[in-house]
Image (cartoon, rainbow, N blue to C red; front, side, top):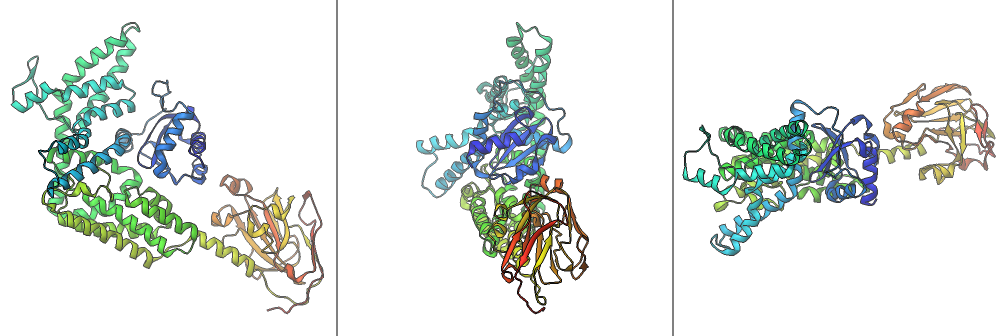
Length: 629
């Protein structure tokens, strides 16, 4: 499917362009904020080709599409006005509150920066390695140019966060950037560096180093956005375009230096110190907890709350000892997906697990988690265990991160600091987490749903055949009321090809299956979607309600039979909810198969068009006598 077509389907299935308040994306997800989540068709989205999973976390409607997310995001921008900041969009009726609201804010602010942050982090890590092993001297101009390219994002981080925060709170991003620029303006930096006593109209100002900080500018822009709406409402339209920015700068910049700046720096440092203390108390235990829980936090979107802490640690201490343990979790889920690839005998799942393993090695685990390990359950648990083991090793080794970036093969250089201390522990930890998870997945095994489906279809073909005494001509009455459909038109080659036997199909009008003749129930499938019955003269009939309905696991079906039951023509055998099955995304066309067709010279359909229960449907001629087993 082309990206443009996928983009159109996504926009339509989230309720249309008018239902979208905002859209950002991270490494693998489109993160929508919708006016009404109920208008989004989550079930159809999950079944759409090209979509890995759909999640609702932190007030966001998240569509996981994998590595192609930038292309899909851009395609949405081309076919709609969703990405147009100048368009007037109706605000959501209500926003998420509590923890969900906090996670929504943090993810919306940081998600657009993850790509460039990872790239800059990799470059910074490579420069650390180059300087530590003597390939480049820090005094060389080459090093300085490359270091400027790598470090500028982090040094000027308040400017970038001003833009994303302003977009989140519908504020003027240029005023927001100006406020951020004031915090790192050379004269302000000089006052801090020289320790010059500073005041604002006699009010003492506690100066901080705001380069690379996170919380101060976010607080400042949130307040700025609220003030902007107030001033735009009370000021005359002829003057508000330049008077509002004037008021915002005069109020917000001093307020940030006096209140938000010191408060944000102190809070960020306190949180960072708490996590550092936890690793100081028991690095092995703290590493194990982080390694085990990181992917669980990712699933629920709670990991966004720790991203600012990682950045703050690097900014304040020049290193971060919390993130390395999370790396074990990444490689653990990678190992679990690899274990699935080795274990499964299903070609489709093997291909998916293989591609997901490769993607996860580079830090993008959503395809592996949502497409492979989490649906299979046991592999995900194996990944949690492997992450705990690897995290404990990394925590005990005291590994540190010296730059920001999503953990993965390419970002391993960010963990290589002066002397390489802790780096061998990281390599050992991620290798152990990968191997343990892969081995546990292979040993514990998992339920392969696709393979099970194929096996069940095979069972439907073979188990329905019970030999009886001399088989004579047999009339088969219709077990279902509905419209006749040629067997070749059934959207399942197992039936349409005739491989399972000759017969006919019916598009049901009523969700009831009755006995087509006097006989015995030979197979009553536990998932209730199908049954087999043999007549007293030896005709073996399989009734399979719908296509692929085995995946419903018995939902929307009510069985009234057990294997071995004697039935009379017209007895109620099975009931099913036609509407619910269709809403779930499945065809309800029902094949009626003579599974021992080879025992008859001819199988003749007697009816076309509409048919009612107990009307003649098939006639079987020239039956061969066989002994019952």
